[in-house]
Length: 294
Image 1 (cartoon, rainbow, N blue to C red):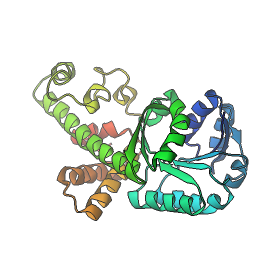
Image 2 (image 1 turned 180 degrees about the vertical axis):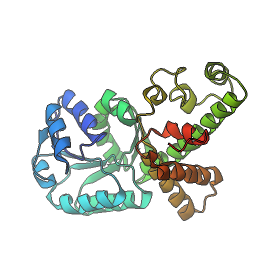
Image 3 (image 1 turned 90 degrees about the horizontal axis):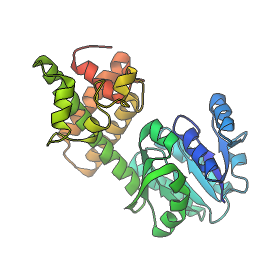
Image 4 (image 1 turned 135 degrees about the vertical axis):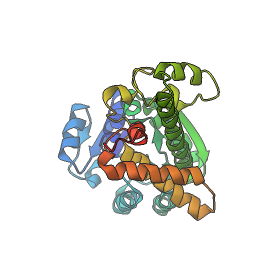
């Protein structure tokens, strides 16, 4: 089995690293938050005092960090100390430009690298059913695939460096737009006297069918495991959806793409977050559309 350094053991990284331990890998982890380290230790992860110490003997380094600036800072700090020929896997969701810069930093130190953001939320991280969107060379992907497998339900090699982040940004723009559409339909149905279940039974088997409806329905009842049945506890927090939507709009501007629905979804989630709902599941936007501020 492989010795893996895992940097970033939060709500996503901790369970992901735990699945690597379950698969028989040796995982040496570091996080800035003591409570995350304590939980990681319960998962069987060997917790380390700093990022550099986590690299000792590591053949693979996995990072799961909040933003591009954090990824680049960590890469600049640790790559001089990573064993030659090792593989760098960044699972953070960041902008495409920063992802490509991270690949360049790794390359300068003779390291293989992929960007491999994920979809599936905390539930998928715990269950080992995440979708990984990978960008990088064929050699890097071939080496990364067996490492990603214990954490994954699906792994897609999307293309060259940065392609994984591009796929993630596009996917989550679709998700944000579609959740608003589904939520608007349920709000309209309520006004028209149509029950939630009736709308679900029709739309889930006809042209309105989508993941936001059939897997993550924003009203309680039709999909028992959706956050709507848990008072919109996340899942996937609205603050993270806003982050991803902002990344999509930055990318659209840089690429000269026209994304009017993506722009509108970004504005709606910005308002929802501004009202103090950043820690609410993103499907809770239905409350905002109902005219409820909180």
